[in-house]
Image (cartoon, rainbow, N blue to C red; front, side, top):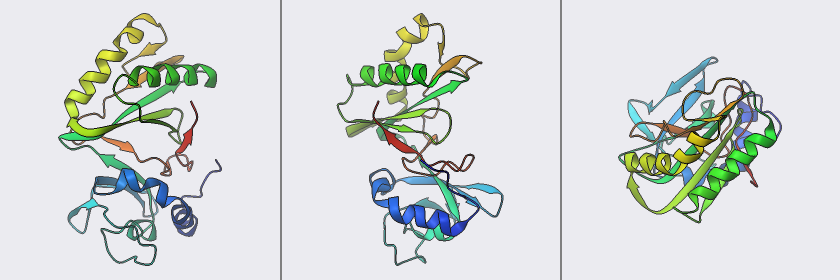
Length: 207
């Protein structure tokens, strides 16, 4: 995936006009944290004093703050889901520090296979940064803190037994299985969103 010039509002808007339909299932009805370029990045959870909640996807309406296109038109570039007390999506961040692509993909595949005991509806996305996001989709919501406990319990054996896998910020040569965002108020990048630090959009990968 090519970089997006995230300082160019038109380029950001055109990217989202082409890709918003793939983001709808993750955005619709959720509280959102978004990064606006003004021109430096500002992280916002509120717009006009109210939480950002997107419920509409009309490319011809840029005036309604509940409509997705309001935001790229105001030069918002990066969108994150904010977890509430319950969640129907369990995100797992595979975060490497100076590790080969092949090893990172192997660990991502292992964790994905472990999560198949929870759901058979799992997608993997490159984060737009240095790692991958595993998105485990549930048929019905569960307590968000319980979701973290379930994941941590299932990945504990590989964290314990594989020397380069960790559950803390990774040192050089390590890969973190990060569930730290799984709590009310925690957030994770929406699939296909532009990473405002790199300009690279999140994209689905076959792992």
